[in-house]
Amino acid sequence: MKNIDQVLGSLEQTLKAQQTKKPIALQPHKPAKIIQLPLWPEPARGVPNSVLRGALFAAIQGKDRKALSRELLTVQQGIEIRFTGLQLDQADMDVWEQALHLVRQHPLGTRCDFSAHAFLKALGRNTGKSQHEWLKDAFSRLMGCGVEITHKDMTYGGSLLEFYRDERTNRYRLPRQTTVTFYNLLI
Image (cartoon, rainbow, N blue to C red):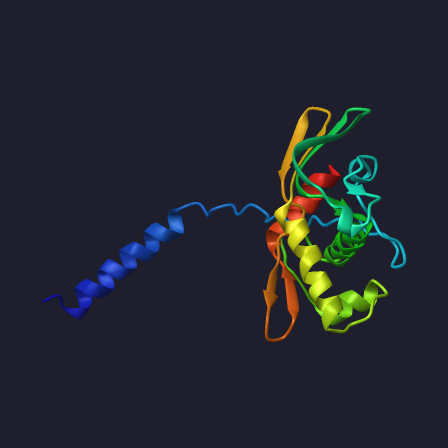
């Protein structure tokens, strides 16, 4: 067993060795770059230009929807859009625009929570049971469709929306990935 003099001697040697070493130069920490969707005024709605010009949201009545399979919707000025799923209409575009509008306030990769009631009010719709069901249908179509949007030499392939819904509270959550998807459509 070591005596106290041996322990103190060892400690003294360790301290001297530490003092003779050069201090480690710490690199300044760069703050993380926060990326979020472009901000636009409250009354406006922002949608990627390629989507607006691409006939993704048809001017049809909901009852006239067709099931499409990798249908070429448009080719113009370096933009090509292919679509799979039930055709989307102008009301679906209103829902997607509102989702984009809410997500724009959140940094890229963070989630966005909201109530169905508030979402419907923001769309200028009633908030009864039939409207809540309509909203569920619209979210389902936006989630269930597949788009391939090619702009110049890059193609985004995926759905337009992912979501979680709490059936007890009627609250929705657009997950972290949703903001990434919207951002990819914009660039």
